[in-house]
Length: 279
Ligand code: PDD
Image (cartoon, rainbow, N blue to C red; front, side, top):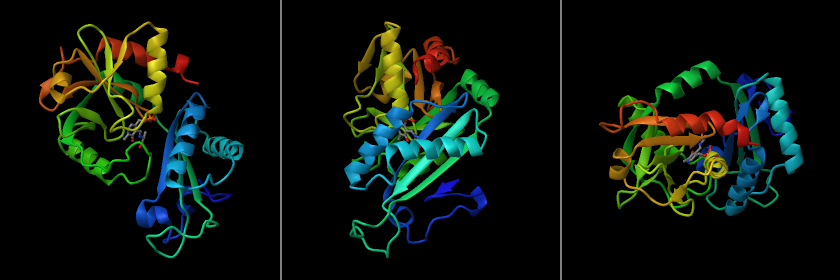
């Protein structure tokens, strides 16, 4: 792991107990997929990190060029060809106080990289996943990728206890916002891809943005509009997007099996093409 200027074995990697990330979830993070040794969509992830930081008034812990070097070096030291790199920035460590510490308090930067078993991941995607739906009880600034993920964790745990992989949040009007750690999509009978607009109630997922690029390249129609849980249950296909899932088909929502219960053809095709557009 990398922690504030030092590379250290993961078991020794630690931050101070008065780190504001620990005490207030006063921090932001990114997860990038590593595919064939390459950090996928790195530019977009770094741009979103900068946006999240600036929304919270936390400064970049190191310059962007240095951060890229640190990410690569962490990936290299862990010998990751296929996997994930996680990086987190907090407002730093200071005596506990709700008010921000002095502006010269150094932010905390930690980076972890770990491999995933690609064969296992592909087998999981080929089988498709189940999702449950839960009321969206998160704060209003879900556009910021903060480490304040307790509602997301509770939702995922509930999904797991019910034999599902993901939980889809829905708003007061019954419209799906997003997954606990992914964006939500459906495919209509007309083969239109539908996903909620990034302007309200969701994180602007990088995989989501790149998939919109891919869909345009393939002359598919993408409709960025809200859809209800009921519409999703009647959809031809559904899937999720995230750096940790790429494009993963959904075959069941609550008790409703979608279509013939097999992963959707379009989702499978898009998944197979994804890395040809991601940078
Ligand atoms: N989560 N929405 C939420 C709430 C998320 O946490 C994530 C990703 C996404 C998808 O964003 P992207 O395509 O940029 O990964 C949407 C990461 C993977 C995580 O917390 O592990």
